Image (tube, rainbow, N blue to C red):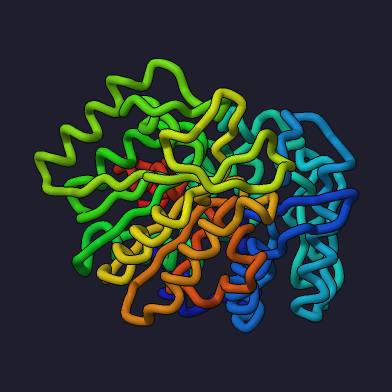
Length: 389
């Protein structure tokens, strides 16, 4: 990939900058600013280079329709305050925009186009839409790794019409993921959570040959507990996973990778309940498994302390209720405590979790990507990255 760092003259160049500013909103208020903070380096880099910046992003899933609740206005205002620079948001229909319309005042340096997913052509990866977008700028920069698994117009097709470059954050994300998959320091541990084992089977199988330990927690661990003959009460469980689980254990034997899963749990009768620690043979039909138990935490902590590389995606329990957050917090604290570990964390829920304990700066790298993070680890070719190569 060509890097934006390598371009010497960006003075007055109109740069179409694709970012992922899809932050959680509640009543128009930003709940988590992590994704905005992550893109500050590229914005400040282009400001220093005296570029004219046209920001493209999306929020939510408006499905090609204008939805005022999914406007980029609050994100635009937040970024404006962070960089202490005026930003103009353009609400005009993109199809009516021309290059000369964007920077009418001499001190205009940054403009926001309204939510790109208000246009159905974006998700259709429409050629003409990409061409029109490209006509607004002199060059294109993708600094949205977390959108790069999408074959969308502003991520994929657009590179056919403009000189195209990787942004600073995108390069950092890829370098960090390479470090845990190819330039790896052993012993290595992958902690993987989430509710569906089928969505992560490709990742688990791809990582088994590279990792010494795979720790499976969260809802997906229930499938393994059930597969091993344990009762899981009314806990979340995926159907028809027996073949998948057999494949995981068979592959792990062939590569001397240890699969770890809970040997005790924390349950409640519902997600708002108080917590109760139980051995696996004590689980009743009306129990919900909502966290890992103290024995499991102890076992995981020992594995982490013996590791030099840790990759973590997915909480260990229903951390939204503090009664079931202990497992996740203990994992986070153990990784942070050992300074010799190279740690990479990814996924929206995991980021929300570590933000709750103000620990986001204590990991070597935190990826804001969810799907792209996982697909890259699975070994898939990401359309946005392929388009830049």
